Image (tube, rainbow, N blue to C red; front, side, top):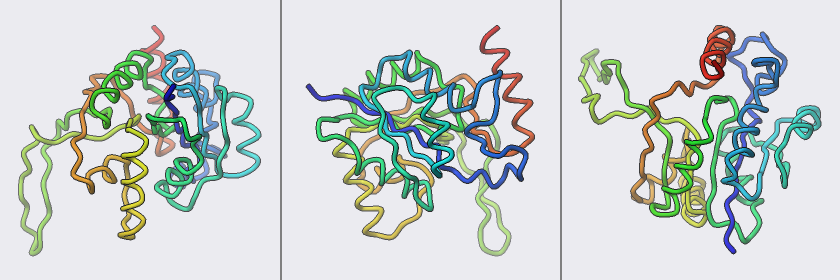
Length: 226
C-alpha cells in the first residue's frame, strides 16, 4: 500500500547563532537535543512510515542516528535548503505517496497537528502549517514609497508542509529548471498553480535562529509541558 514519508531537515549551517552553540539542531532544549523534539513528535503521531534525515556532516549524522525514528535513511544536505529537499526527494523509496517536509529547527509542532495535516493531504495533495500575520506589513517601493498590504490575506509559513509525492517532485524539478531560489516548499508548488490548503496554527512554532531564541524556547517548552 502507498506510504507516507517525513523528510527531517537538519543540515542548516546555523550561521546566525554566532557560535553560541556548536550545532543548533543538537542544542539542548529541556535537557534533550533540539532534534529529538521533532523526531519524537513524528514517531508518536504515527503519520510517517519512513524517514529521510538530511544531515550536514558525518559527525552530526552519527549524533542524529542515536535519536532518529525508524526506519530512516540519512542523506547529506546541499548548499541551500532547496538542494537538501531535492536530495531527500530523490532518495525516497518508490512506494511513498505523501511527503512531510519539516525543519527540525522548529521543535514545537504537536502530534495533533501532524495527524490533522496528514488527513488534509490525503484530500488536497498540498497543505502547510501557518499562522496569520498580525503586524502591519508594508511593501517598500522604488523612490522610498510604502504600500500597505492587506494583512487579512497574509499568512506566515511554518513547517511541516505536506504534499503528494508526485506533485512536490514535479514542483522541485521546475524550480531547478528555472534556476530559482525558494525559501519554502510551498513556493515550489505555487509554480504549478496548484491549490495549497492551510492548517492554521494558533500555537507558537518558531524556528531557532539566533542565540536570543534559546531562553525563549525554554520558556515555550515549559508552557507546553506544564
